[in-house]
Amino acid sequence: MRTIFAEYNPQCNSIDVYTNTGYILRIDCWEAEKI
Image (cartoon, rainbow, N blue to C red; front, top):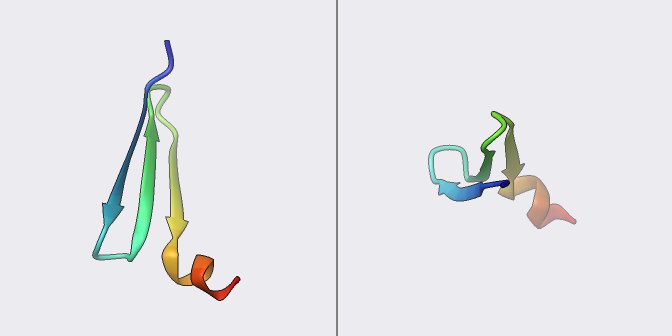
């Protein structure tokens, strides 16, 4: 079973996505707004 958890990180203005396998994906909201 795969578990994915995401939360907004106001200090970095980013969205952090965590998986049960230990991976962390950080989506930078400043970069995403430029596109």
